[in-house]
Length: 31
Image 1 (cartoon, helix red, strand yellow):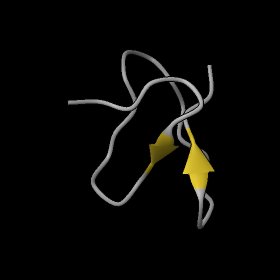
Image 2: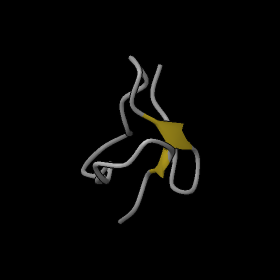
Image 3: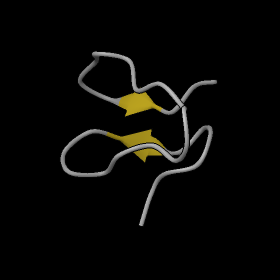
């Protein structure tokens, strides 16, 4: 399972495809 654009990432939740997860306490997948 993967996180889509705009969804929370980090803490074991990785982003779908080539989305980027910023290095933040609360991060959301970005293009």
